[in-house]
Length: 261
Image 1 (tube, helix red, strand yellow):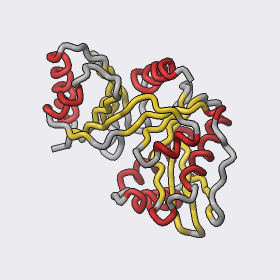
Image 2 (cartoon, helix red, strand yellow):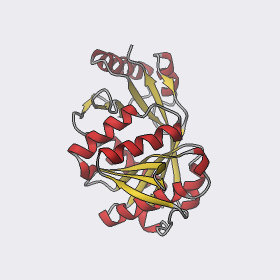
Image 3 (cartoon, one colour):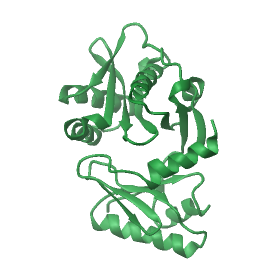
C-alpha cells in the first residue's frame, strides 16, 4: 500500500468531500473548514480543515465554529488528524474550551488483501440488523461492551435503518439469545472507503474471536459491493487485532469535544 497516496485519497473523499451521513444532516464548507451538522442525536462537528500556519487564522476559524454550533444548540467535535496543520491546532482547541478524548489510530486495509473466511466461535452466530428488534439487541450489546448509555446511538441507528438502509450494514453477534458483540459499517457510494464503526464485545466474550468475525463479515459485504478499502478509527485495544488482520496505521485521530452549554 502506498500509505501517503491512500491517506491523501482518504482526506479528499472522506473528509474534504464528506457527505451528509443520514436524515436531517447537511454539510457546509465555510472558508477553510468543512463541517457536518446533524440532529442532536447525530454527529455534529468539523471533519476537515485547511488552516494556514498563521495562528490568528486558526483561532478565528475555531471561534467561528464555536459560535455556529453553540448558536444551534449542539455539542460538537473537532476531529483532528495527526497530519493536520497548524501543528499546534490541538493546543489551540484546548485553549478555546475543547476537551480531547482518547487518541485513536486511522487504519486502512485493502479489501482484496484481507482474510475473509474468519467465522465466529462455536455457539455464536452473526445476525444482520434491519429492524427495531435488531437495533434493540445491538444497543444492548454496545451499552454492555462500552459501559455507556446507548440510547442516542439507538435512535441514530433506527433513523439510518428507516430512511437510508443502504447506507449502513449493522450486525450483532448472539450467543443463544444473548447479544455479546455488535458493530456497523457505513457506506458512501461513489467513494473508495467503507467505514467500520462501533465494534465492541462484552467482557466475558473477549479474546474468543468474535470481534475478528464481525470485521470479516463486514469485509465480505464491502467486497461484494465493490469497495476497495476498509477504514477504522482504532482504539488501543483493537489496533493490535486489526494489524494482525492486515490493516495499516496511517495517522492518528483525536476527537476534541466542545459541550453544549
